[in-house]
View 1 (cartoon, rainbow, N blue to C red):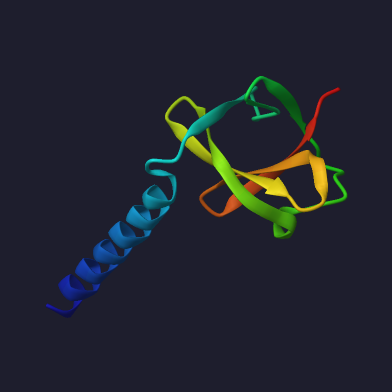
View 2: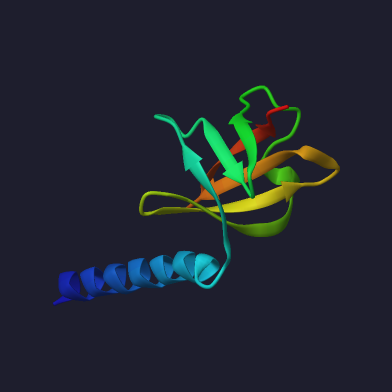
Length: 103
């Protein structure tokens, strides 16, 4: 009985977390796409960005929420970067990447 209760609590917690993640993107505008074998490219409203592993910013510098980018069935939350117009932060679940505008 105790194992069933623990399992039930785990399932409920998983559903709550999944619902919270979905709620963050439900109804948000789709503004771009993520592409490439390792999600190297981000296109937002016709502007191209490239994954930048050496960016002078990171996810803690994220600013305002801009919208959603998609890659197949996956949805990524796109954030501006405070004080850096050429960078965007692209986040899925708890992970993310920094992208730099291609000139």
